[in-house]
Amino acid sequence: MKKYLFIIIALFFFVSCEKELDIDLPQPDAKLVVEGWIENGEYPVVIVTRNSSYFAPIDTNFLMDSLFITDALVVVSDGFENDTLQPMLDVGAYQNGAWPIFYYKGSKFKGVEHGQYSLYIEAEGEVITGNTDIPTRVAFDTLWWEAESGTGDSLGYIHAIITDNGSEKNYYRIFSKRLSRDYNFIPVMESIYDDIYFNGLSFEYEIMRGELNYEDEELFEDPEFGSYRKGDSVVVKLSAINKAHYDFWRTLEEDVMAGGNPFTNPVTIRHNVEGALGVFGGYGSTCDTIVIQ
Image (cartoon, rainbow, N blue to C red; front, side, top):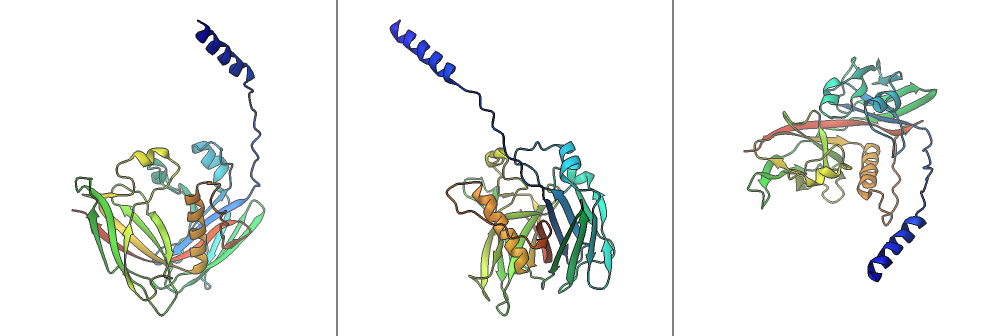
């Protein structure tokens, strides 16, 4: 009885000492965020949003009322013609959990190799500018799929061989899209790299499937996480980008991978637009399709 009485008293002591904490989380400074790109053979696309608190609720009302800016003036120029991009609501992206669901898209010219482009935005009293170019297109030498052990030969990664042009400095980004399963192209894991270690060489690259949201804990319980399965038809896109474009995605990926770990070095994201956070970049892209059998 004395033993149980001691436990009850101890529990009462701890409960009575509890204090309800009311933490006033600081709100971030209001800033505009831009993600814009132009790709060979495609019209320019620009997303304009507001930044938000890490703990802000994410739902449809928040996205359309608080995140996306739907009344901006967005102009992209190729040096010869100005294209005022029109707002687009992508219902299909919303229904498939894809990104983005709202963006501005051009209609007057498409991207070409070695083209030079400028961005001009007026939004909420701010002026945002940026510049980019589309580098020479690159392509995979070959693609194949290899099953991973322990998966019953049903899951695996795509492998690629790429030959780098040794006469110039090159930067790359890789995307993939599973036909009938992914709505848009998604950057693969570790999608961004330069040729510092393989300049002028042929090298093999293992492609692991990326996700739109790595903060979803259920992803890591998915047996297909990072893999492509037998029966998938996958379009893999290899894009050449310039250094400023590379620096943005490299530092952003480093920040995402750090995941707020206090033991990692802080990462400064290197934006390439003026007047806002974000990026405006060009892609010189080539797509290949692999049917996994």
